[in-house]
Length: 114
Image (cartoon, rainbow, N blue to C red; front, top):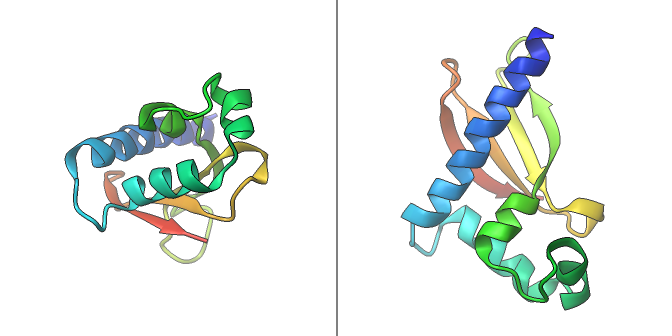
């Protein structure tokens, strides 16, 4: 039960950090913006219609659609990898947003990976 609660807390922190990163960092290297904009351009309007009700959703809707793909914490693996991967449903992409945490459970980094 502790691991599940830990996961839900980390997932919520990660989701908040993803949205805040999108809002606050307007630089060209913003990984969240790159992820959202890339997928809005590359994925068919039918996919978006099916999942959001719109053929071209807003960034917030794309971010809310992300689902967890992988969770590693310091206690379950040998290396110090504490992260959650998020991606779009139905394996529509090979890309994930990886949210990494420091030893205190604070969000350390958000990167786009494949």
